[in-house]
Length: 316
Image 1 (tube, rainbow, N blue to C red):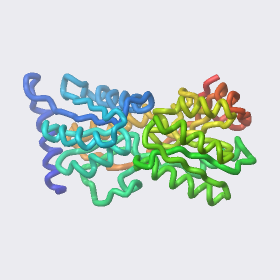
Image 2 (cartoon, helix red, strand yellow):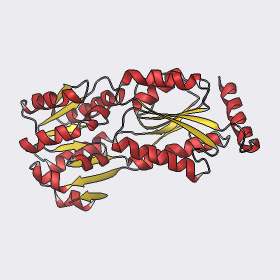
Image 3 (cartoon, one colour):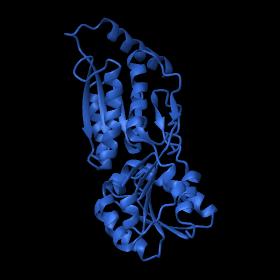
Image 4 (tube, helix red, strand yellow):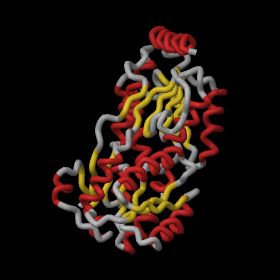
């Protein structure tokens, strides 16, 4: 398998060095789980990394852009369709898309962004053809942030889609951390955005102190629903994706998605140039703290000055 993959890299390199404008462009299949502003930022980051390195869509490469629109079952169908189109590389955006590609694609490169690593979500094997940047999820730092903002914290409510490997893994890691600190965790499963209001209401009935939304495409897509209920009931929302404060979450601690996409895109560039990236899969290096002061106030949360002082960006 390794020799086949090395042959593919050499073939890609040879094509780039010798192809004339009239010859076939390298084709990249891009797969995204849903149309969401945060994921779109990562997508922009990937495409910018490609373009900055001379691989602009329509010139040296052709990108076939696909979106599953939140339907997990469609991801496999999309990837299988791309394989029949003889694409040269697949780039995935989100953990479910990465997981599907890692399991289905063995004979060409897969580059992922906005995902946990294959190992984190239980995908076994060497996966010599899979590359990307992953989130280590800083559960301890996230818990510290909640305690700093809510010293009397006793109970956390987490709505999540347990059909998403990323959400399931994230909830597991956070639950372990908070349980270790003596905090009660209340969970409410959702299958779609339509379930979010009922799930959130069930959590409110359990006297929670805060909502946590973590690495969950379904919950993030329906976040405005959660924000409405949280505001009405004076329960703040903390998220592991900083960009979600734009939708009304109070605080976010996590990775900048545009940067994440750009760094993953650079791995794709290395492969397109015929080189194997020095590090196949690596952790995203930097986290950001983002605060929505207006939402925090509306949700009854007073943020300590110590937290505001170290915020990377703030919405007034």
